[in-house]
Image (tube, rainbow, N blue to C red; front, side):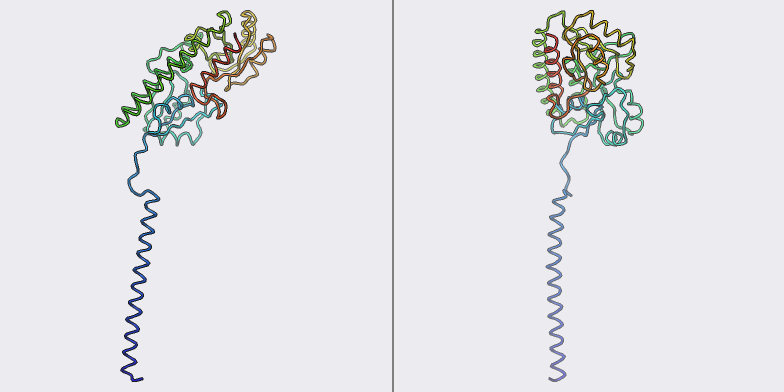
Amino acid sequence: MSKRKWLLMFVISLIFLLTVGCNADETQQEGLDGEQEETNSIEGTTEPENEGLAITTSFSILGDIVAEIIGERGTVEYLVPIGEEPHEYEPIPSDFQKASDSDVFYVNGFSLEGWLEKLVGNVGDVPVVTVSEGITPILLEGSEDEDPHAWLSVENVKVYVEDIVEDLVERDPSGEETYRTNAEAYLTELDDLQDWIKAEVEAVPEENRVIVVTENAFKYFGEAYGFQTEGVWELNSHEEGTPSQIARVIDFVSDQNIPAIFVETTVDKRYMERISEDTGIEIAGEVYTDAVGQEGSGAETYVLMMKHNVETFVSGLK
């Protein structure tokens, strides 16, 4: 082969290789571009849809009420775990993060959240809103302090709902229709619950309408539905369980000649067990005061919790 022909074939081969290589690069790049486009779609690099407000509440009962109003337009978390009482709760590090990440932190007020000052001092500018505004408080016996258990009257929870709706609408005006529609449906459910409770307690003779528990938490319930209430102590944050306190309740139960006493899900049961042993009066069941029930309890919501309590009272006292 002549030198000229060899040189010509070399040039043609070089051009061919360069052309194939460029085409391969382009094909590979197109594949990568397509893969990248698919990844962006999966990861949602486009503007996300509005996920609504992130709300934190102090305890589970309040969390359930808020969830009924906000529906799927936002998220609701609560700090005090179910089964723990909220009066003397000690916030943990994750609580500070939850509150800090929230658009608003809803609390009961009436001095329920004694730990609130410690929490709020570490969560920046998150607004803290009390949702019991407009409720007339009942004072603790022998004190100027307010009893916080206003939610144990359905009529008071309707005030909570109104307070929450107005605050949500102010923060998220575009969600007003959703909030007001959900609130109206929930208020109807609360009206039905109120009527049901009034009908159920009629089965209890008036002389038996006495609720005795460890923490005297049912004052609002008693005022609303015609029951006298008594407890070993007034508030769990004042918990003592002294011999004189227990003796006073033993005398009260014996004098009243009531058919049953009760224990709470968030309070040590030994105090009422001692009173039951000394009086011969049975513990008729467990009731909910400071938290809704665990999953599967039948008391997982505020409405179900109240129905459970009423059924337990009626069954024990009628």
